Length: 259
Image (cartoon, rainbow, N blue to C red; front, top):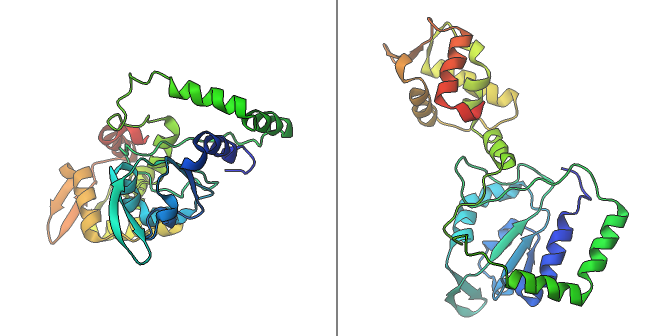
């Protein structure tokens, strides 16, 4: 992702709409740390240039995005529970800063154009949002907008092609290995441990995480190749009667979306 495409221009406009009810964080940890009084009584929180650390708090982030209440903590004062009305926008030039899982229903991923805006575009936009009358008109438009066709908090976010692409690009290395390198194991009878070593080697060569266990790998592999499991002195997978083309056909039937 390149800079200068206008990501922050959108958040600047939203902050003007929400006025004192907007908050800003520069690090994803800012929404999960204990002392959070600076973010209370806010309706809109934006994270600016979030980096890859977001993956480390992905599970916490899921809970934060959908919670109905939050704990307000101030130094030296007992914590209390308050309603949570936060809405979030995160901007980043890093496509892989968030953990995207297949079937995720919380995150809407929007790809900005790969071209910086012209100087004149910025001038026109900021001239518009810096005029209080324009902001009032925009505020009233959203205030009276009919959103009855949406079930807020119930409907899943829109699954656009970009998010789907990112989710599949973040599949485990062993899934990538099976789908992208069937020629390495077609026509062979291979032990599960050997397949595991091949998958880990694939991960390292392609700069992917190889931190997966035999248990995780074995569960996935058995589900993918149920009809080819051979139990003889350990688990083996018998692909001797399968050409690369036949394996591709089998994998396609298992997961058409991956292709």
